Image 1 (cartoon, rainbow, N blue to C red):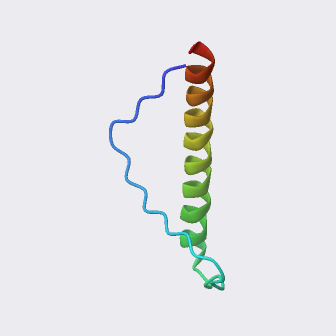
Image 2: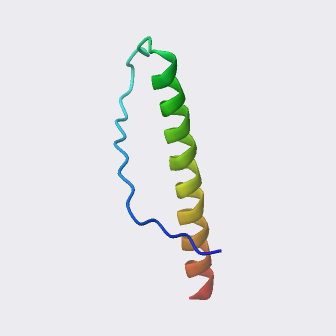
Amino acid sequence: MALEIRELVIKVTITSGQTPRLEVPDAALIRQLKDKIVKECMQQLKAGLKTSAEDR
């Protein structure tokens, strides 16, 4: 399955020890969607890397 991304901009900030902020419902929904997109992209990248490594 081909993955085509024409334009995707995701800003990810990872910090440790930071307490979560209270957010409005729309912001929480956007965060959930972003997390799903990042997870799916990472799975696709890992699968591609695994396939590349096996082909060598």
